Image (cartoon, rainbow, N blue to C red; front, side):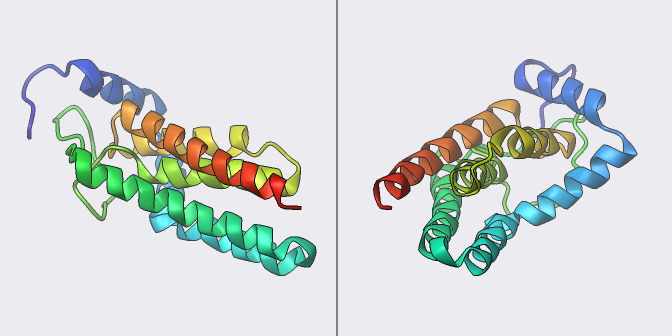
Length: 172
C-alpha cells in the first residue's frame, strides 16, 4: 500500500534512519550483509565451518547451525501469518531486492541474532554486539524493513538461540 504525503509513524522513523545512516559505504556494506544473511546461508555456512574446525564440539556446532536455520524458518512462518507489507513510501528508498513482499519480522535480524547467541556460546565470546546491530541497521539503510520488523526479528532470534543454547549447555 503506497502511503502518500508526509511520512508518519514508523515510516517517518525509517525515513529519518535511512537518511542518517545512508552513505555509499553503508549501502555497499548493507548489501553485502543482505547477501550474506539471505535465507541464513552465511550463518549456516559459518556454523558448518565451526563443525569442521572444532572436531570436539562438532555435534554442538551442527545443532547450533540447525538452530539458525530453524530460527529463520520460524521468522518465515510468522511473516506468513502476520502478512505485513514492506515499506512503500516515497520518502523511503528501497536499495536491494527481496525474496518476498512480507516485512514482519525481519528474517535477517532473526537468523543473525540466533547465530550470534548460539555461536557466542561455542566461541566463548559475546558476538551479539558485533553482529546484531550492523545487520539490523543494514535492513533500515536498505529500506526493506520497519524498525519494529528488525526489533521483533532480533527478539525471535534471541529467543530461539537462547533456548537452543541452554539445551546445548545441559548436554556436555
